[in-house]
Image 1 (cartoon, rainbow, N blue to C red):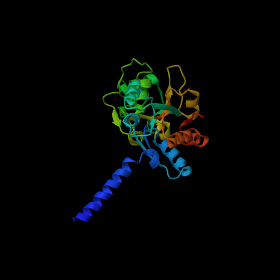
Image 2 (image 1 turned 90 degrees about the vertical axis):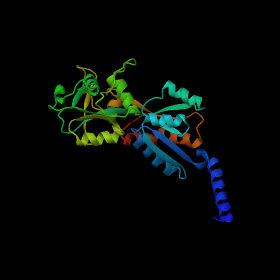
Image 3 (image 1 turned 45 degrees about the horizontal axis):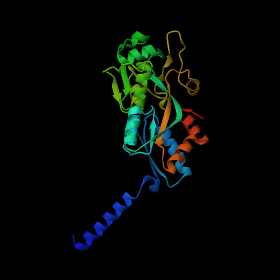
Image 4 (image 1 turned 45 degrees about the vertical axis):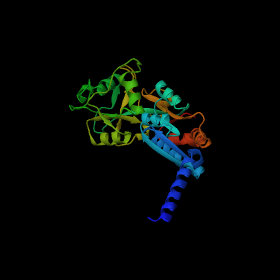
Length: 287
């Protein structure tokens, strides 16, 4: 390489470095949204509608679990967290140590649905039965009125907010001091779609995911809080009324001093159009 070519390439490299260093997300019109696998379809739908109204803004949406999004936010690598659980006190403190103060929004409501294969005759289970199944105490479908076959437990991975919520509210039944854990035989899958696909293919499976993944390829299980209480199927109405036993809020988090385009996206999520998108993606609007 001659001296002239070397100097030209060096100049280009320096220019790119200067541009990159001086190009914040705010100036470059880009937003990074990371987090809940449950909320991926919802955040992508918001993004598509928002960018049509605001051309020139680039928004990246990735899942991987609420814990993944929160970790990225704490390290300063994303602008908005989508989360199916609240940030913990420890996570908030870690963010503050990095100079990040969070702002929390409840953007929608969700019901965690329990699903089995359509060929499975079981259609109703109590919270107690679900707890025993997912902890591995009930091992055969015949113990809950089904066929004489082994139960295959499917769960989200531990960095999933849905995993955490299901453990706290089904296995531990809301007891903050509970120590119950999923069966060591549970298959931990990386996404809600992976659970949906496995349930559709395997007649012995049972799994759970957010309402946004409901499809005819899986059968919904009606859930009862107790032996003498009604069995309730998950729906927008039963989640809104609070009668479905496994319901939860869905969160968005930003920095308190978030750039204008980030707050504009949040405003859109709470607008009439944004909340209609919530409903169309099978979640429950908060407005």
